[in-house]
Amino acid sequence: MQIIKTIAEMKETIQNKLPSTIGFVPTMGYLHEGHLSLAKEAKKENDLLVMSIFVNPLQFGPNEDFDQYPRDEKRDIQLAKEIGTDILFIPSVEEMYPTKSAIQMTILDRTNVLCGESRPGHFDGVITVLTKLFHIIQPTKAYFGLKDAQQIAVIDALIIDLNFPINLVGLPTKREPDGLAMSSRNVYLSNKEREEAVILYESLQKAKELIKIGTTFEKVKKVVENSIKEKITSAKIDYISIFSYPYLKKVNKTDNIIIAVAVYFEKARLIDNIILNQNGTQLKRFTRGEA
Image (cartoon, rainbow, N blue to C red; front, side, top):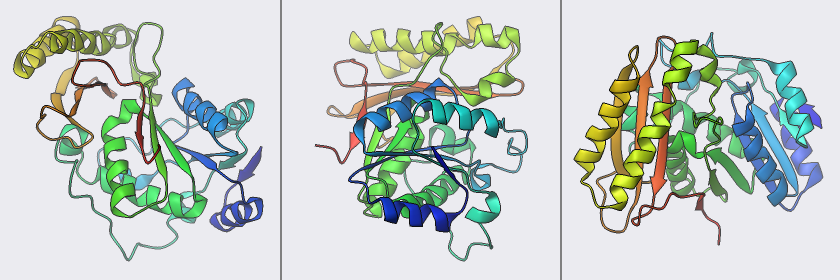
């Protein structure tokens, strides 16, 4: 595995290798099985696997956890090596943003709901860093986990609007044995909170069954809310939402459906979701640009 820390070396390496296909997995590090499952799929489907580790300051708000975000570069390098990563790109903040940007990127759609509603500017930071990484690495396919479904919806818009020649691949959320979505922020949960957090996925499964039998969305949301409130005593619900996917608008008869929840615990904000087709079947993979 080759470890690269500068943009110049990364671009030169890609140009010299000239692979037929490049699978790219961007991460903020502190790798878990969710990240590794993306990398394994990218490895299987492409000639070259590139993973990046970069904690992007632009997507953290003033009261968010950039400085406290969990980091363990040595462990990340070992895990990336074990699953067969060809190139691990680990740039510094100074390398990615050497000067104050003269251009500001802003996304105008798909961000006024879910996490975007309570995190203004977050997705502007996401599209900025990904635009830079896409130009640097020139991937054929870019892989993301469906746990961050709004992020995938935003990236979908980025790829379409800016004509990136990239296939977008969203893969199923990787979960703990009890159903909790894997997340780097799970380390912030107390033992009690960790036990309670399982209700997020359990409530989404209830919602799926209700939608299959034609229950109204308002009633579905109320059932999810009651389930969470009955189980979790020490957290605050941020949102329980149902929208079309990936457009994040009011659902029509042909749309896929996302049911999404977010809950604030004392030191962590957890999100989870499921995406269904109109028959109530859960999507295993979201793609854009693939045949």
